[in-house]
Length: 270
Image 1 (cartoon, rainbow, N blue to C red):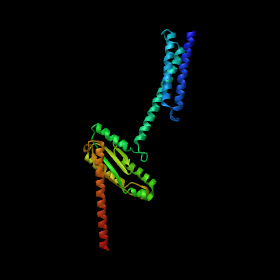
Image 2: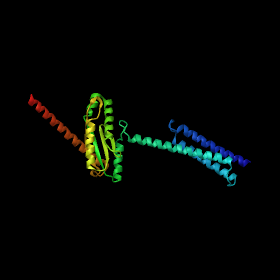
Image 3: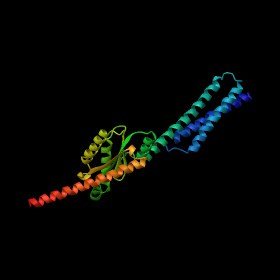
Image 4: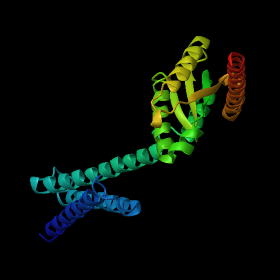
């Protein structure tokens, strides 16, 4: 009887430890509570599992390796289920925390688009897989006037609006990202010149038509580069960035010539 009593006590202790561990998980790990210390969680989960194994060993010794009676099957099953539930909660909470951290690290908080880090990571993956791709480096001409005239809150609203426009200019497998300030990047899978032309015209037209605070209008200048125009992701971005500034220079020169022509015509009429 003494051995049977000791065995029952070990089984009961295993169940109690497992239940306490799970109560702790439910209180600290589930979404409506802050997560607890990872060391403490793993310690309790490991302790619950260890106590279950000890209880099972004691019970098997008591019955001399014969089939367990119902008195021990039920609490042992309960202890195992409790431990399994605890480990499952730990796993799901860890997955949620990791996913949340990943999203925060790779997302621009203002526009909700992927940030520069996410964009560069996608380029690195493309290089590692020897993928063919096309990159747009997009800059907004005249956007500074929105901040100067209407304030930074209006500027933030304008960036969000442009981000929405650009994300609608690419396909599901492509990426529109905010690289910083009023600069954006587009990653297009493949190097199809026709697709590149279509996307470029779409970006230019939709940005010009975007509904911005105060009825402001901006233009999109962009440079385009393919994965074969640089040995590294950084070099590809440098090429696209350089072409973007060249496009801005040409646009400014064209605007200056147009203004001069208009002024000359006005003087001639006068």
